[in-house]
Length: 289
Image 1 (cartoon, rainbow, N blue to C red):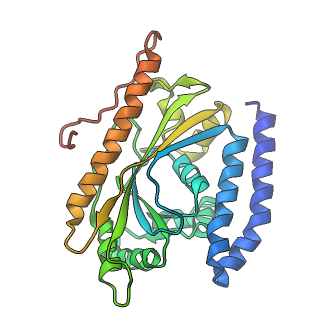
Image 2 (tube, rainbow, N blue to C red):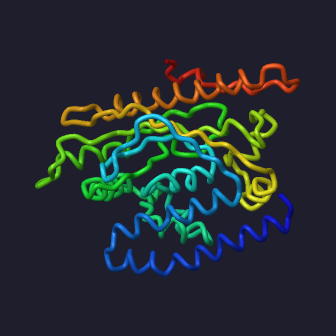
């Protein structure tokens, strides 16, 4: 993509953002939840179309309006736009993001739930906020690894915020006797029509101490990308369900989906000179399936 093409596309995104920000702010301020939920999906769709991000999804997603806590792996900032384009949903994010230029504003307009990981009691507060939103029928995405990864291995899922599911079931006057825990796997298997190799991985995955601006610049100039979103089989969370075991089941589901994506990519790479990266899905300390 040429520099002029990139600038023009960014200008279109800025125009769409300016058009939508007013209605979105009003809908959040005056409690028009349905409007506030749907407007961000339009912005995400426009961005993905303009920059050639092609999303395919499979599996068993929640029904429209069904509350669910989604437990997903996390590869890149692009995960937000990909998932946000599929349906109305919100995210859980670290509190530092709320102060970032542009990104922080977008997160707030997406009705993101922020957690201050440096403060004692933060988990309990966020669990209470999560429980309230889930009881209201929201779909909330939790990147259960707690950070982004390089896409070559899956980090252990954390179970602390899954405790919010208990709050939904146990709350007084609540009609929910069970809650859906939804495993979700995100994979980036192809770029410019070819399987992604190890050398191309840093152009997609955003992790460690990578600076965001240079990463964005490389991403925007590198051409179309394919994304696979796989909804795993739902895990019912009921009274008596152990949150650690439920989290482990979700992790195993995501691991299996990533392995299938890896195997398909390796098959496509067969015969190419450059060796495909091996996803370290059976690393020591991580449960194999």
